[in-house]
Length: 117
Image 1 (cartoon, rainbow, N blue to C red):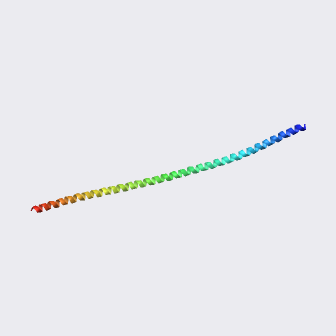
Image 2: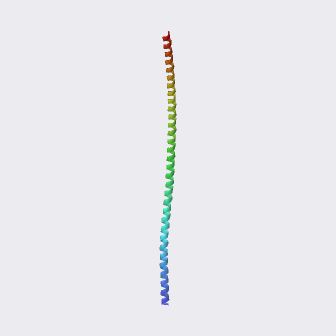
């Protein structure tokens, strides 16, 4: 009976050690689970921050694009106005040239008429 009692005590001790080992392992798993949950929250916060940063960057890009488009339109209008002005100046210069040629021809005709008389 003493040996049987000793055997039961040994079995109980082994079971107790296994329970303690299982409890330690369970504690470690719970700790790792909590750490993973914290990492998950950190990843979620980081993802949300990246989304906000991306949205802000896109908005800045769109604003810059609108600004550049407005500048381009302004430069185009200035260019067209300058081109129109140059065409007007060129037309006026050609008109003046034609007028001078006409006046020169008139002077030559008057000269010739005077020389004939």
